[in-house]
Image (spheres, rainbow, N blue to C red):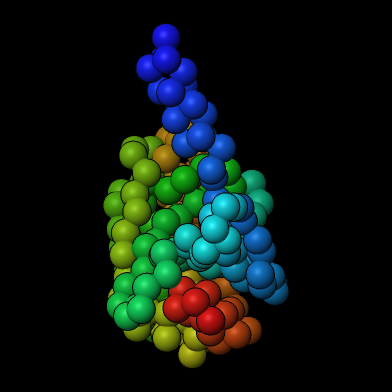
Length: 164
């Protein structure tokens, strides 16, 4: 009986120690969220969302846990409340970055991009994004976003990731 109580307490503790989130920047299509451990208050990860959170709008998220040497970040795409089974994006007239499927339906896809992609976003003017949702009954969506204000959002994202 004592072992069952200890196991039960361990399981309960693992669910109760979730990371608290805080929106630390929100401007136009850019939203920066910081996740922290509720007990230690240490930053556990940062996530920069680009795009509108709306039913038929694609958006993309860049994320990472804090690191000393930032070389790459994770990426995921969404359409409304659906995760992406694939996404493509292009900054200005640069090279198109593709991950996952090229049509709706399938498993959720996460990828990585080099830190240079964030620098291109910060210095860019136009961001073209297409996301293919995991739900095959939801259409893929394409949107062109202005990158006006992106340099501030990217700078704050990088600062969040290095702990400043």
